[in-house]
Image: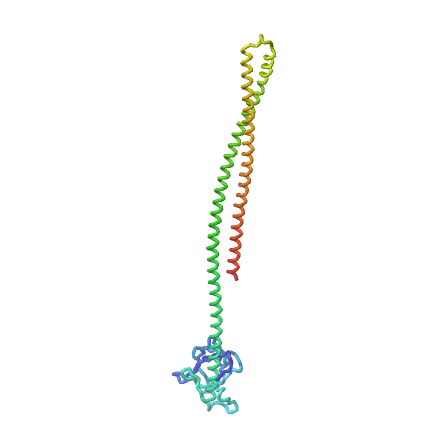
Length: 297
């Protein structure tokens, strides 16, 4: 039976002659859309009676009348041969003439062409998917390479940070030594200033010595001579103390200048270490953003 509707399966139903010597029908469609007298089948194999109306998927154009043989078809209601249900044996539709054969051949060619188009479409989709997979693999390899490069750079930055930390520690130790030296020089300076003050307090000896030389010769004695000698010694000691004090002050100024240089170097090292840390974080964020962009793209 040639049914044009696209809603009717080729294996819609099966009609056979049973052992009980009657014709029975079985619905083979997935949606159980075969009807007898516009009603669903009440059993797996339902007996067909002469004049029963067989329909498919509730379409009036797909209604057919069953007759036990062609002699029972009313003359006024006889249909075309192509509209009469014929018995199907072994699941193969009968080919009555060359026209039916051509129709079958045309349908088969159409199906083959349709399958070929579907195959081509599947091949195109496969090629697209293969290209996407290849690009994804390349992206993953690029990301792995970037991760390796980033790891090496992080190791280098870590080494630089360690070196800067060691330099900073050395500068701090040098600054501590400088401060200790500064404290020592300041203490020595204060001691020298105290000594100078003590020497200046003894300047009355100079006046006594001058008065001794102004006295008459008979009043000059050996004790006055000893006082003059002691005064000269104290005067020389005062001059030496002044020179040493000037040297200490010069050394103090040098230490203060060196302290300023060390403080500046420490500040530079701290700033450099901070900039390295910021650089590392920015570099990591940039690489992470590129990775996420490629992964989502």
